[in-house]
Length: 583
Image 1: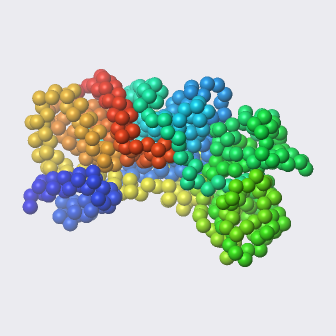
Image 2: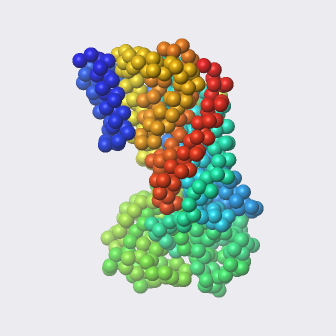
Image 3: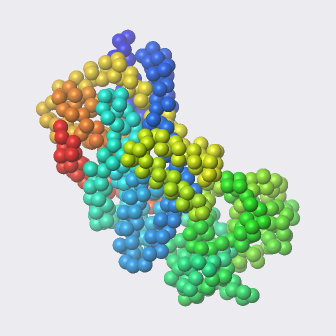
């Protein structure tokens, strides 16, 4: 069979599989690569070259650096700092969305949405708004921010990495900002003033699936909580924590009222989900005394500390005793940060007598965790949910350093990112196991395989044949009409399939058609890059999936709000792209 025919058949088959996801996208990409090898259309050296490309290395490195920022609590700290600001709550919510877009310009959209989700939910409650009117704008703001820089989303990097094979220069670090920044600003205005009118008013379900723990946290001298009433602290409203008791010296106040004033040295018995307790411990200036004593007694190497959930089994020597009476810390060498019990209670954790079925949130040396014994069964590892603000300056310095050196061209971006990853590992800001786990391998496989397909698409002449046919159909549209058509088709493709796949499918068609008609391909490349990230109409984008359940949205909610935002980004792009990148 003619090589061009084979490539076109494979192209159509891949398009169908990407859109329907009968197979995972990385499996489809590997199957496509295998077909190219079996048919002899690509030699092994060319087929596997994508796995060692700058694009793949940069993507993998950025996944790891984003995890380093999350582990250090940098993004979480930004959200908590904003949440503590006084002033108009509606304005604060809008400032939060703007901050999300700004952070997302340099980190993963999905990670940014995940970290800010509980914070934005708290701010929306403070503003008296249904959470359903804040969570979808949160996801959309993170997507808008991703169009501002080269590293804002993996799609931008994928397109940039594919351009040299077509004879075009890679995207500059801030090249997309000419259109991405205005699009993000106009999009945010839409989210501020239009989206809330279109969104339903539904109560959120953020906590439904989260286990509520009881923890004793002591207020430090430098804590912002000291001197404030419980109402002023916003522990319940903004941080999702309920204060069930306060111990001050020898006195314990149960179920304190909202006007109870917190003092340094008070021990708060708080109830809330794991993430809220861990975040509060790191950002509100409160400490777990058990954890503090353990760290004072033993200098635990970074990366060797684990956080797990352990359930108390029948026959445990802990039963009927408080953790202090059972000498838990001395017996096991680990610290209990919190305790979960199905029955509601207003006791402090230190006063609770352990029962069968209690779940303990345990932190300590990995070796000690593994030797807890048969009477404490580890049921879940939550280590990656911890953050340590002491590592934040180093993590932020490495990330910003890589971005600045790569953005200014002092070093190739891939080199700057790899060096930052190596230093993160050397400084133990992240363990090697967690670093490998942070990489989104399906995206890596997809990109590497599709780069190889792009090579086959060009070398066999399939690109010339297909674009020659398309150019005859699209020539009457003139360049602006062609740009609009390619933008619209890419938006349609990126709803059911991954953003990266949509971009890589459309890129050779757009470039080939532009060259055939005598136009500069650059504006069409920019249009496709923006359109591929324009996943607003359906909830299938990962950031949207994160808020879909908690916001109790329906598919139609995304169609109603996302269609308007898609139209806004389309119009702004059509106005700016031809002026910055002439045809």
